[in-house]
Length: 92
Image 1 (cartoon, rainbow, N blue to C red):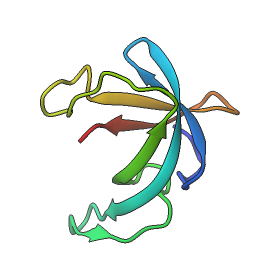
Image 2 (cartoon, rainbow, N blue to C red):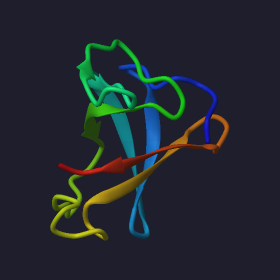
Image 3 (cartoon, rainbow, N blue to C red):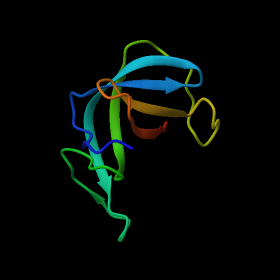
């Protein structure tokens, strides 16, 4: 996984099935405190953190909530500069 935090404005490659699209982090809605399960305000997500983030995609993709379809409801984020896996996305 990537060592850099996820910050709004950063652009990633998003892998959805076999399709690659660019995804820009718009805003971090909140971070989940794994010890208390409380939602906390956050300006960025540190590596291995869990949170809710809004993304803008370069193209529309056929997505569904992860709860309904594991294949259509997941993405892998890849850093555009280093090609390192930056994170996993579960669509709500």
